[in-house]
Image (cartoon, rainbow, N blue to C red; front, side, top):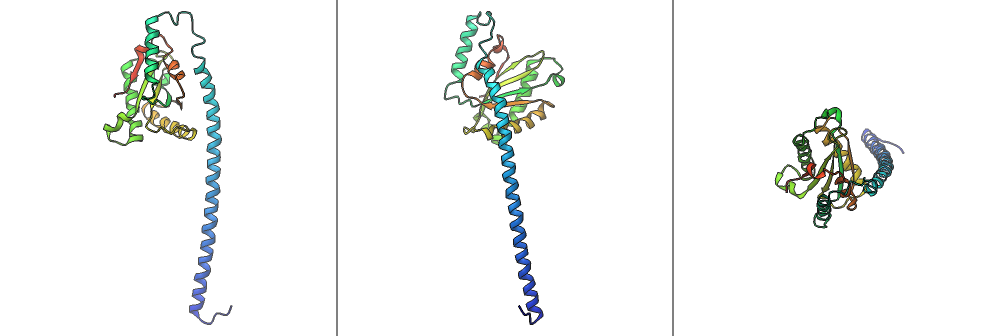
Length: 224
């Protein structure tokens, strides 16, 4: 190619620069696409490990009634109350779809159990969680509900919740992402408090959270 004047030289340089820029952009996009694929693969591997851990938890839920003492069913009225609550909460209209455990961690709570204090912490978290999912309009918060039971008040204090979440499409990736969100929100309420989240499959979760003989005294239900 013979360049006859300065203008032609400038135009040639411009065209070459455009070609180089396009090649660079293509290369960058290719690298970015590969990185996204690697990140997604890593996420799926992490989700698989989380699911294996949660499957061990489900075995505990399935067997929650098999290791009870002879005195567990001694109070017939309490058992009737438990059965009635489970039937109510597992009705299709209630749509409870998330099983959540919030740990308060004794080092943060100092082992001094005051039900109203724990309830306030839960309400503080619930407000943040509803804001995350529904925005700041408090009138919308009733679209999500929970029933909760406080356990191990004098030792490893924690709260078990069954949640009716507005998102009815609950898959493994949702659980993974949501657990990370809940962990961040909960730690703003209780420093270093841990969380455990899973799909609520059937009544076994309610059997589990209502397993203690004093569950009714420590049960909390969201405002409806």
